[in-house]
Length: 271
Image (spheres, rainbow, N blue to C red):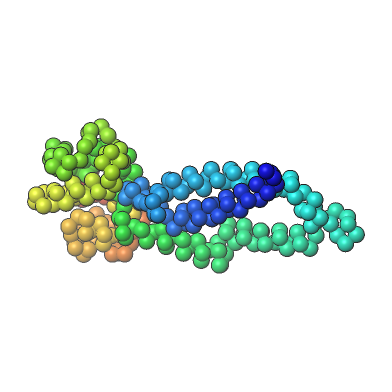
């Protein structure tokens, strides 16, 4: 066996795998969506792609160091002038350095076309939200079943009956993520199962969590109000808002949180 050849071949294979995992991570939804909907692409989750990318990065670093060691003479020859003297800033090194700095500064300061490329990535990531939706509040999948039902105003006993009738195995102390993993379903599946079951039973629930990232129109819809009705209610509190405004931004203008405003409007704060 030739260790030099093994090093070069390993670098090539690792580069292919890291390129693949990097592309998958570029396309993957934000963690809040991936964890909530148990997102997978081509059989692997976002966490698995991230783990692969991280471990192969270590292997790539080791192989790169070995590659430099085995090819030290050719590399140093790139840093010599016509008289064979060692000169670090050769024309080639200057061009390579400029290329690296252009990419570094362009990324850090969001210059075009780097900003366009990153914005394109964000659009892809956020587009998953339309297909999978988001959790009713941050890290809902980590809440125990008891706390989850409390936060959303779901009756605990009825929620348990719904799970049992759908053959979902659970412990009330388990998190939604644990229950989902145990039953090979996503936390989102459990949430929608409960929500739709309550709706069919004629039990109206209003979820007051996660309002901060919604627009005024979306909050109005959550509260079963028309946009104008909701804006009028806000106006009665001395809060001015437009339909397309982010609800959190509107509240912050008056040194209030979204839940502070909900409380002022007479809605009960989730436990």
